[in-house]
Image 1 (cartoon, rainbow, N blue to C red):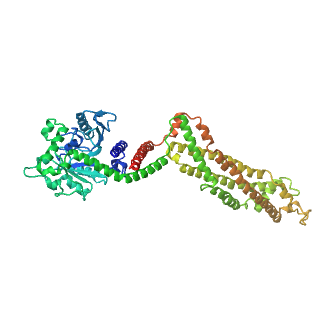
Image 2: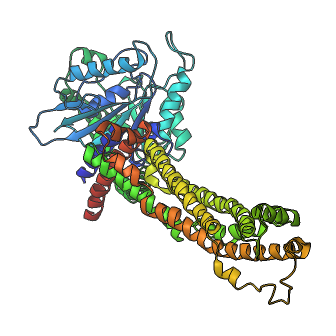
Image 3: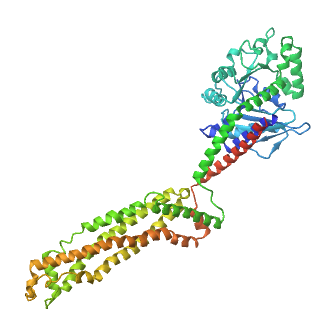
Length: 610
């Protein structure tokens, strides 16, 4: 089970490297879900000495006032016997420290780099890993010592700032609280117990440690506290005897200090019966064992969080799209694939797979017929206009049988008005096709990723539609002009003649300009014009579909693809120049996803081996 703590240490380091912890996100993270031990105590409570005793090395800065001014995440990794001890900082990757005096100096220097050479504090943690055969696998977070008053050089808010920082760690339900209290002070005034009680009133997550037992006044002892009568916690209190300042000054090593600590509890009458669970060695083993137990109990919840987060990360990466290819060929291929996706979505709208194409049929089935029906031929076929045009067409010689030239002029002047509805139908379909282009652009996920390409594709598609509209307008108006240019002779041949109706062919030619005669001409022309309108009602949609809709489906981006093949790499890059924030976001998500997948595999393996 030792490798379980090592696994959690590994995941925590990876989380920290990626910024995947509570300080950088408002969401629950893998870091928050992993159990850890936070070391809490007032200034000069002996916190640093306890940590050094657990590690067995002098490596923490010392001095008066606030010495720990940034959280120190300390990860201990047990090595095989005979292995050489060393330390590594996360901010100095691949640099090993074998001199622990240098470790202490680096902690001081890194603190100063963040806070300056002042007595200010910072919530940004320092991450230190120590590898040694003399430690147990363990993760401890050393927090700044709680204080009651600000000293010179500190802001008035320092007391609250430290409390808020400590609380941000220990209020997490997966945090084990190591509450350090000096035995030579009243436990009721212990800063560690006070703040621990606020976040863990039942003592379920709190482990109490009493320091400075050897410094208690003569005639007093810590038995009531160690046996839990003074303040009961779920876990038994542990007493430790740290090195004195004189020992530190004399460089008494940890091995000798631990031996003297064991001797103290074994030979002091008041503590003999408790000696088996006293001392820094017992504390380290007990913390390691307890951390293993807590981690084991939290595995199902950790797995659930990992699986949920992986799904969210994959969905987010899908939404952001694929990263840009580095080479010109890859860029060109990416652009072509995105354009094909857009083109297919556009076709889906036209073919009814997606909504919108039905509006084009509405133009043919309702808008065009209604426009043709609204055409007013009253002006062209008024008595006055018919008389005027027929008279003008006759010239100096009146017509003999029928005013053919007059007929032609009247028909042409009537048919020419159909150009308006024909043009309107072309423009209406053009507007609908443009709308479908904009819809297809908004529905093409990859185009959202590249604003430059989105603009270019939209502009190229609209340019193509405008060319198609111009061609469609030319062809459609040509249909109208063809009807004007050549009349259907059979229509007029089938008309009854005056003789057939019993008319008198000997009437004067000028009698044919009477109202009855002119009205009959108007009726005949109107019948012919209506016949032509009925024909154009079917042929205009065919022309529009052929020149606009069909062409749009077949070659909407033809010119764009042609230009694309001639573009230089720099120009291609500009089309795929997505928002830097999105690129950064995708990269961060990809790394985070890799971390979670790795953690998923390793935790699953441990869970299955249980």
